[in-house]
Image (cartoon, rainbow, N blue to C red; front, side, top):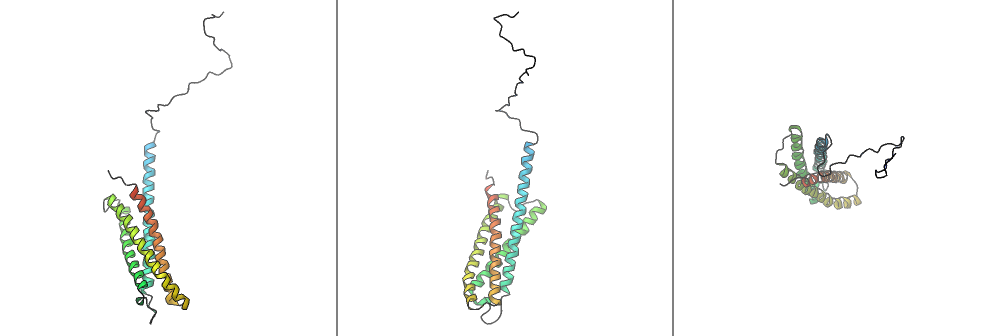
Length: 198
């Protein structure tokens, strides 16, 4: 017999007993196993990918700048078909030389840092030099190409010959060098923005 003052119990034979759900400690969470290590390895992989991507972009800029330099320097076909006679082409050649030197030094520095794992300069200074150098040289490349394009177009209207074809090839190599350095500038800008200044 049951006592009317006792609370009633639901003693059905077939009903499951509800399990208590464990409550998580919200104020002091315990990290899952390997949480910190996986975040660190992801960051290392991302940094390694950025270093290698920057090296590839600078290597391409070096190749295109060198090609622009060689093509324009060899663009001498006698009479009025010498690049020396046009200041736009001399400007393109000078910037191609400057870009070749800059990207060559930067590519060598990156190869050294990747192979030895040691930085030549402090990380923050290196990021600043990369970003500013990439920006300035990329601007100069597109400036020299845009100065030489109208001259080449005017010459091609009159006659299309090996001189104008060589000039157009050198201009296109400068534009490709600009695109490569613009990509490198984006990577170096990202690297600069993730530096801690503390």
